[in-house]
Image (tube, rainbow, N blue to C red; front, top):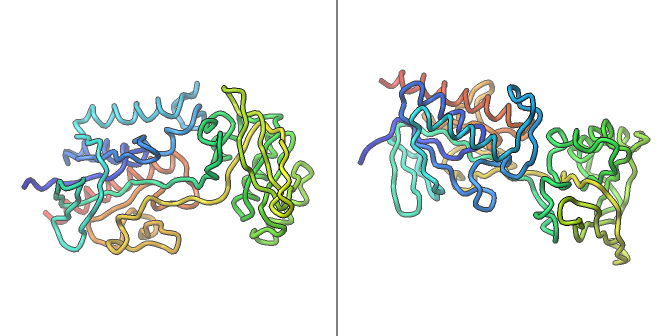
Length: 312
């Protein structure tokens, strides 16, 4: 069996950037795109519409179009791409082993770029209007909601942070929470409650996202105490109920934190297993941006190149 110099697991900005750097360093990378996010390789940008904050694209472009450009650049430098999911790994000894179904592959090094997924409500209309009013990233999409009425769902620090950020653009932000008390820290609660643009709707859950076929126009909401239902007009819905890293197959193979993110040595892409590296949102629960994912994908490729050179 041929032993690859490097296998990259996952696509998106981190995986494709790692591939570009590895390929240019003549490491002949083999990249597995995976079928993340409901059959869409390319990561979370496949669920976004216009991307306006990635340097080098002054006119902006659609998220899926950006991922096609990332992929084309990786292929241009002879990256081999397999549109398969890696279903199992063995990092106990080198060469490392990974499996796509029953097919085994071996590699001297592995870069993990499997990303993370936003937690969704899983209510009718939510998936249909993702990128057309429904979002899980205020930093990415807040700009498109200038002078609009926005709802933020969540009760933790992230929800408060998102809501306060969105007041830079929105005319009003309503925080909807299933309970009467927030989980957020006291300082974040106070900041939100003191913001004149933010209102709270307690004991409330979203049961449906409504729209006109093109964009979201409002919500169906339910009082969690009385069961009373009503319609709520809103131009945007931002979910801030957490993210889940795509690390299930790596449990017991590399060290993860309590939330399931890959642990890396500070200032590097090095995981707990020598020869296994990580880039992108799979190891980042703070920034979660395309530009930072691409940056850490670059770091992972450079760290891998140096490590392999040391082995030789």
